[in-house]
Length: 373
Ligand code: PLP
Image 1 (tube, rainbow, N blue to C red):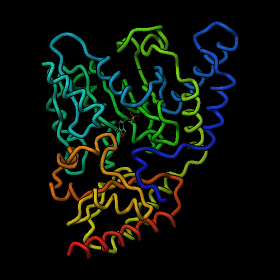
Image 2 (cartoon, protein in one colour):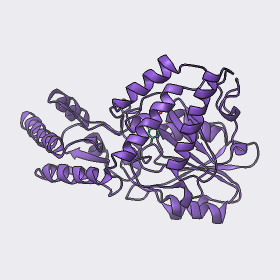
Image 3 (cartoon, rainbow, N blue to C red):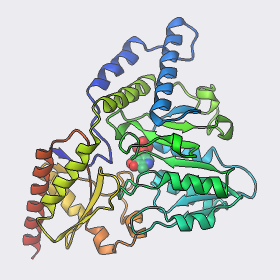
Image 4 (cartoon, rainbow, N blue to C red):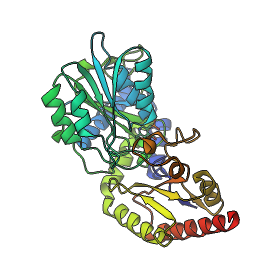
């Protein structure tokens, strides 16, 4: 099986299993209790928090551990809402865990702006500039698009915020950027940054939210007051420690350039058939889309699955819904969208596997075209 849906989720590093055992069967204590064993576990969480802050390049602030990035995004946005004549700014390209919150806010009567994307799939900075003002309470713009791999210019966005609405909160959904794209919070004015473990070879069910200023965020649910009162509930200690392990391993085995090579090699095989269009916006090397003229993406997905290649159809959370909002917003035709498939790599795949997947994709497409003609 060759797995090309790594933007959907990734295979967990084997080493995380050992960490899971340690913090579930040995150091299983509740971090909020008062025994020395519990305090030891609590110390491990604090160490993990410091590690993540360092990894993010944050000089100040905290990291909250949540159950998924969907939760981190909801907490960031809903926890920043305030009464008054405020305005909220989102991009048209956001993941459903941000976009659908924004739509809900609009239905609730709040003033919400959706900033369009340019042809490269990035937030149009001129359009962003037009909607920012002293009334802006929150700006929520993603780091890397899960659909196109387009990378937003977070430094330019930070500068706009500093100039036009210094009091606003800047939230970034960093799920497809964290540990994939070289990045540091230090050069930005980001206040909140969401990231998820299962996209970077960690376990499912744990994610993070960087919070620059705890006082500016409100909790979504009340409880025992864990994690500075902002995310009550007993911490997923094993998940947090496995998440940290995954990040450490990526740091050790750093090979981002390899993903660039994988994409190049893959594309040079795919280019062998001119009927396949490659939608590569020159952003993240981890993600691109292929358009198979005359064949539905879903048909390709199932046929490839039978031949041992797993690909994706846009965002995994919404792939059962028709269409693709983000590709539509950047002007890709309806026909092309129906024929599109998302390909996403990981840094630990071999060039041989990727080239083989490319050959299988060509063959499967040719077979389907022959059958329908
Ligand atoms: N944001 C982006 C950009 C994503 O790609 C995803 C997952 O596909 C999420 C948020 C949601 O992440 P999680 O599965 O951890 O809730």
